[in-house]
Image (spheres, one colour):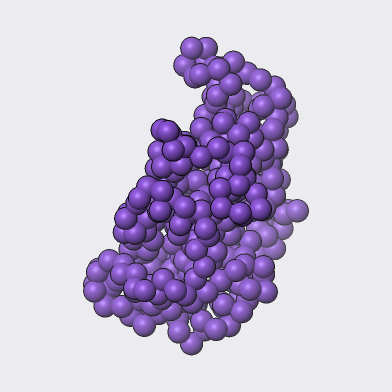
Length: 323
C-alpha cells in the first residue's frame, strides 16, 4: 500500500501520507500534482432506506457520489471523510452506515481517513439521520480531463448504472410511495424477482477502478467523462462539452432498467423529464476518439462493466436523444 492515513483514536484531524519513502505516489513520481475535492450526500434516498429499515448500502452511495465525481476530472481518489447527523445516536445504526462507507472506499481504492457523528436532539425524526461525504483525489496537471480535447465525431460510450442510484428520489417517492396508489416496498411490483424496496436501495455503482484502468491504457484517447447524476443525461453531458458542441444519443443502443419504465408509466412522467431527472440506465459516459472506441469498449467489458456505444459528439448545442 503506497499511501496510508496516520493518526490515532481521538485525534482532531486525519493525517494522510501523500508520498512514500521514495517520494512517489502509487509507484510514480509526482511532477505537478493537482488536488481535487468533491462533496455530496445521499439525499432523500435516505427516506426510502428508513422505510425499508435498510442502512447497509447508503454508505456506498455516499462514497460513490463523491469519488465518481473526482475521477471525472482524471483524478485518483486518495481519502474520504464522512459526516453523520442524527437526533439520538444509535451505535448499531451508525456501525452499519460506516461499514457501508468502508465498503465504498474499498471499491474505489481510497482511504477512509475519518469522520464526525453529530447528535442533535429535536432536529431529526426518531430513527432518522443525514449523511454528507467529502473526498480528495490527485491528478497530474497535464492529465486533467476538462473536455478541451472533445471534438465533433467523438464516440460516446455509456457505462450501465445500477438502477436509480442516488438522484431523483423526491420524484420516485411522489410517484411510487405516496398517495392512495402507493406501492408496497416489500412486494414485487412487476415480476422482477425482488421487492420494490430492494430495487430502489441498489447502491450507486462506483466506476473508479475501471475508469482509472482505461485511463492508464488510453489516456490520450479519452477526451472527457460525465457522471450522470442530478440533471440526468440532458444536463450532465453538456458540462464537459465546449461551446458549439452537442451530443446525439441513440435510445435503443442501451438497456434501460425496468424501474424507470415503472416510474414513467405510473407518474405519468414525460420522457424528457425522465431524461432530465434520472440516469436512465447510464451511470457514466466516456467520450473517446473514434479510432480507439472499439478497444476501449472491449476493455471496459473485460473489466466487468456493461458498456455500449450510445452516441456521438456533434456540432450544435445540448443533448438530443433519438429513438
